[in-house]
Length: 348
Image (cartoon, rainbow, N blue to C red):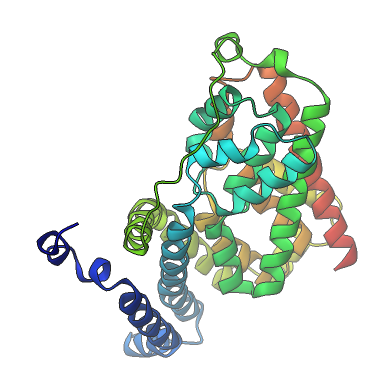
């Protein structure tokens, strides 16, 4: 690379270490101003801060920039990390592994790989061609949308590290166990015929030796792709959460989604499956539900069903799976989610 070409690049790519240091300082400084700024904006409006409307507006004005800043920061960093985990590298890491170990690896890789339900078909095909076992593939496909940087970042920002780690542990457990069970059932015959008939391909991967500037560029690309795609869901989710936070009576939510209602967990799963959302849209709603007295296990079950068992993903997967395998996948995952909901309602 010659000097002229380097000088034409944006400053972050010419001075990557200085850029990362300065960006971190600016991000932290802005983050500290969010709550005072939200309160000041509400005070400037012709509404009573202690009214339902005033509380809803403050909730929206504080949570929106907070979530967007957290998401942008973590997606940028994870975009740099994700530059190491291309689909080719992921397939190469999983191919040839024994079941059990491979299920754990696949679920863990789902945390750091930028794949969502819209990537389900091409990823599934690539894994099958690389010789990755069916159950291992499902462990990855469950974990990738459910336990990802977006979900963990928003949970950390709204509830703290304990809830974020709890959710990560639960999500990984569901992905590992569900994938292992599907693998034990030996349901390869229920792949669509054209998928089973595809020629196998090598799972080799060659590292091209990307520089720090390349990683930063990958971070910017992830922000444009992920934040640019999910911000409408964030706004809708926070708006719904603000309405629940200020207008829904606490006793109503406690009776509807509380520990005492044994049917609340399966009902939460049934409500969550047909909804089309992702972590960015559903977590602000989860925050408001918990604040109104909903039980943690019930809310986690609702969140997991929305993210991991969405109807659009089932429709997409129908292109490569027969109905019986889709039904088995949904049934195993739903059972795991129900167990999670009931256990945490019982112990917390």
